[in-house]
Image (tube, rainbow over all chains, first blue to last red; front, side, top):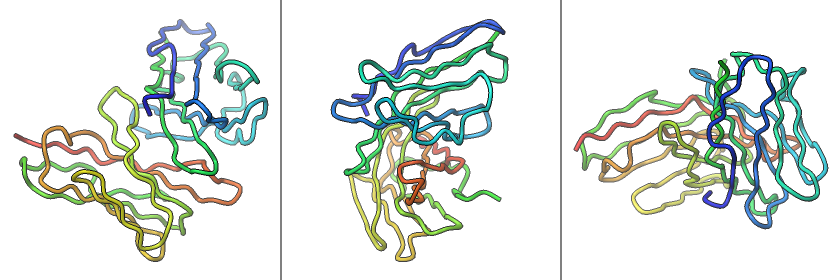
Length: 113
Length: 113
């Protein structure tokens, strides 16, 4: 999992600001999953993306959250108008479909003041 | 009810002792992943099991998946303080959810020197 990059590692935002979280998958991987780990709640699926496509966003909150994985560059998880309840660790996982093994990045810890 | 149950929730052992962590699914799995997480850090991939009856080992850690593909166990032989952390099992249901992992609540392992 050393190859999955996430930045920033820590992010502090005030209520109402925007948070942008970036994830670069392992070389050669074209699938990215985003998960959120809330205190006391465990790790939950948010969204699954391939390059230029959102495959499954069933775990994304309906408002304020969006994700993209452009043809060039990292995958971005964007949270608009952050609230205190968005404070959590956000992880992305890199996956190569034909192999199946899924590797996680170090996470971004978002704190909303 | 939880789709994926881990037991025990926490475990304290003396260095050198063997231990087992269990992961039980209410539904048949396509694949089962084991990860280790240090507090405040990312998830380290340990093993992935896909075939009923499959067993994999890495150093002192052995993971098994039962024939029905609903239960998995993680066994650590001769535990060391470096084994301490949170162990998470993640279930891949396959089908349209292929690659999307549902996680257990985790097992906190403490190893006393």
